[in-house]
Image (cartoon, rainbow, N blue to C red; front, side, top):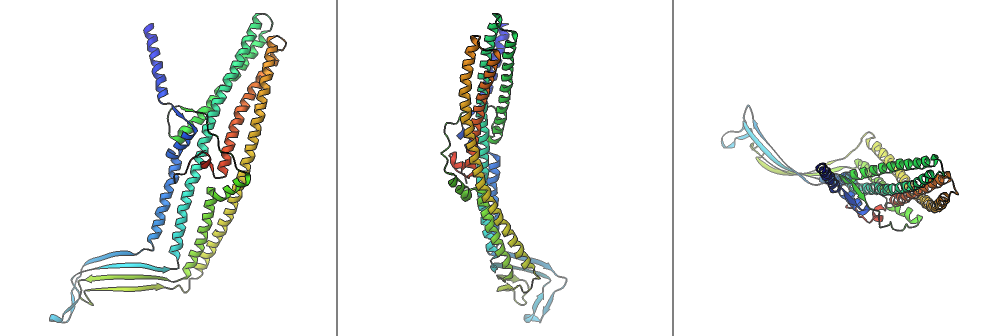
Length: 433
């Protein structure tokens, strides 16, 4: 029997050590920094910058010179010459060959290539701003789940304290029942309160597991995660006017909308360029088997194309580009309005959360005082078990309200900084771009 007990003890010890080995302890700062390093969504957004840069380089290549080498080997069915003897000139050799080296350099094309290149540069800026937008969204997501896990730990502790109070009441009720002072109803009521606290404890544990599961997904971790209560508070909030100006001036979606307006303006100019002539310089060197008109020579050519009549094609292109420009400007106005109202809504939610937390703390203080007094009266048999159960429920609800409103306040503060486009600065991080 002792040997079996020793084996079981060793098994549970090893299992506990294995769980501790896969356990990760995180602070909020560590979680946010890890999210910027390993999150797949952030990495995908950063790869868009490389793609946009490749597009810019592709469009730049269209205005740079191109050099090509062409050649051919030909077997003809006949050979044709003019003249006789030393004056014979072969114009069609039976075995013919030739090659030419050609240089082509665009000179002017209505500045369309320049407009397209400028659009590509703005596309790179949009990709960089998109990374910042994605980083802010992931930071808000990770911080929210982290705080939810911290709050779930607090809720678990609250339910355990509520169970302790219920157990205290049960012990007192059993003592009165054994002394014949109360009926069994008091015991059953206390047991019911304990079971309710156990149910809420299980719900809090489930909420914690959900938050931790999301953290594992975003941070690419495995095993249990232990979270610490954040020690560093967010910086004091500026005034509403400063936050609104910050949102309109630097929020990622506003920056992207502004770049889209410039892209649309460039598109109008680019389409107008189709009315202008195109000029290209070509130069080459040719060597061939045939000596007619010469076996080797070089050339240079300035080629131009002037559009005379295009059946309204360019007019339609310009009209379509102007409509896109109008849409882009309207989108910018809408985005700026959304940014402004997002800040105001976030500030209203924060104020409501702060008020709710203050009232919840006041409610907790009153409920604690009520419970202490009612329990003493119950112990002195001057209050009924129903009075005690009511005060217990009030105290338990007040503790839950404080935990819930604390989470609401913290999340609301994060959303204010996010709405202003300054979340990274608020949490003390810088963009990797």
